[in-house]
Structures are given as C-alpha cells and as structure tokens.
Image (cartoon, rainbow, N blue to C red; front, side, top):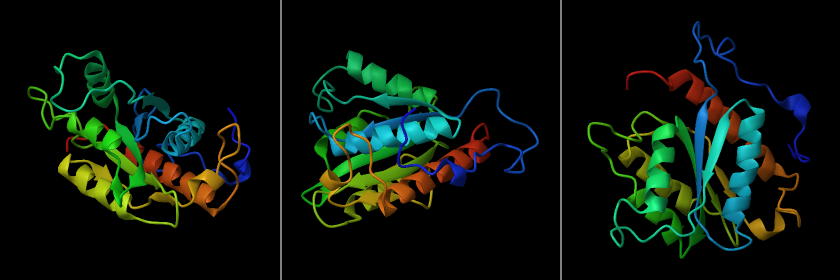
Length: 210
C-alpha cells in the first residue's frame, strides 16, 4: 500500500472495543466509493483512490465503481450491465464515499447519473437506508463547498447517515504527483480525518435496525 504522505504514527486504528462495542461483526466494514469524472486524469478519481487506500489501512474492505460506460438515467434498461454492477455494489456496501468535481457550481452530471440509477427501493429493500456516507469534492480553482452541500442533501434523501466531516480540495491539479498520489498538505490531513471518522461511524451503526 502506497501512502507516502501519511504519518502512520498518528493513525489510531478503529476497533469495536475502542468504540465501546461488546460484539463485533465478523467481516470488515464494506465501503463503496463513487467518483464523478471519466477523464483520463480525473482528480475526483485520484482523491477517491487515495481515500480507498486509507480506508483499507483502517481495516475496511473497499470497492470503487468506474462510471465509464454507465448510460444516462432512463436511456437504457435496468438490466444494463453497468447499472446492475452499480446496484449490486450499493447492496453490498455498509458505507459509501461520494466524490465529485465541481462543474458550473454543482456536482457533475457523471456523478448525478450514478445516484439517479440507485432507486430508493428494490422490492422490499431500501438499498441505501442506514448506510454511512462521507462526501468530498475537488475544485479547479479556489475552495468551494457547493458540491459537498448538494451531496449532503442527496444523502439525506437516500436515507443515509452523512458524517459531520467532509473534504473539499481546491486547485486539485496541484495536490497530486505524477503517479497520482496525493501530496502532503492540510487537505491530505483532512482526508485522513474524514476516512477515520467514516470507519468509526460505520462500525458503530452497521447491523442496526434503522
């Protein structure tokens, strides 16, 4: 695992015992990560990949959905392979990380399309209800919170528990090296804090009847 910007001495790995739980799940927290750009060098993807590496260090199992090839909502059948892949991952997950670039002051269409393919109900199952959520955005210019605010509204609508912490990375093109790894910075430290908080909330809330 490549995390050159991380000070490992400052990481406090969450465990059920540390969080005051007397019983623990038999599997690692299952976390799905979604990002909102299909560019070859997508900074929302790079930030998501960095988050996934941190989550795995913190003891989670992660899966990342690649939105390339996902049709526009209602422009294909629900049986489309990419739609089924996304829905299966949502059902698999106990928590999610959402990351979108800011475009015209809002989340990208690529990201919103993914959410629009996730129904509030699948038969008798509500696929996102009770899951924990962390929200992030990348900006091409100065720091903004437009996207994370919109993602919080979406998370509430999808009946998810959005954690208090969040990440917004301005001038994202300056924050990653040529290998796609995030450079040391206050923004990187915030990312670490967000992922730690997500794992803790997920351990506390998963498996409970919400």
